[in-house]
Image 1 (tube, helix red, strand yellow):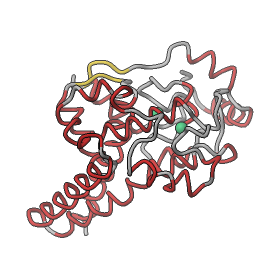
Image 2 (image 1 turned 180 degrees about the vertical axis):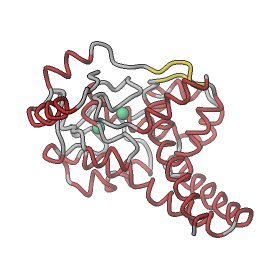
Image 3 (image 1 turned 60 degrees about the vertical axis):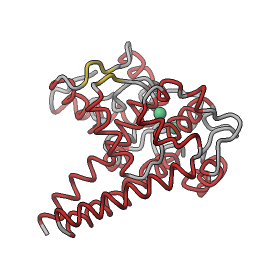
Length: 276
Ligand SMILES: [Zn+2]
Ligand SMILES: [Zn+2]
């Protein structure tokens, strides 16, 4: 049982941070620079969470930011909760719609031979089948070498991690589920409980305000586990640069919602609190 719990925790962090750090902050936004070993480690985590070809994921995510909460946004909940959770996938797995063109929008990733191979010639359905074969083979190998508990932990972690981007696209674009610190031209919100589950990715209003930032939690109480992993990368020299938003303090002070300010003041009365 202990073996199962330890393995599950390991895969949970690897697969989810594989999406948040690898697919999202590193590849989609180029918010940090690292050596290839560190990059491949996290991207492999996202790949084992069955996120599909990194180029496909990036092309769709860049389209999300470019057309956020409009008809061209691949997964806005304005067009239905089921649509934003998973309903959008079939249209994007059969091919690319006109406004999403990875050849021009993901030129940077096409330079990498591994990502080009995983993209399978721009055929998302082929890329998804390859991804499924790799995930199943990996879990079979784990089971044969390390035992069924480790294999099962990996399968369950994949099932959980797979839900994270789908749930984020839904919950973090419904205004009444969270708070908005920045007046972005979309419905994005910060959802604290989702940020815990998604290792820091729930501070989504912050992210839409500063998409090029390698940290999503900006206030002292916005815990961002992925950012701590990036800081670990910086400390060990694996990460050479991590972008952070400049002049963010002023905007935070100006735009902080009243409820959050009150809670913040109460905390300040009892102990010294570091303000960003
Ligand atoms: Zn969004
Ligand atoms: Zn993003």
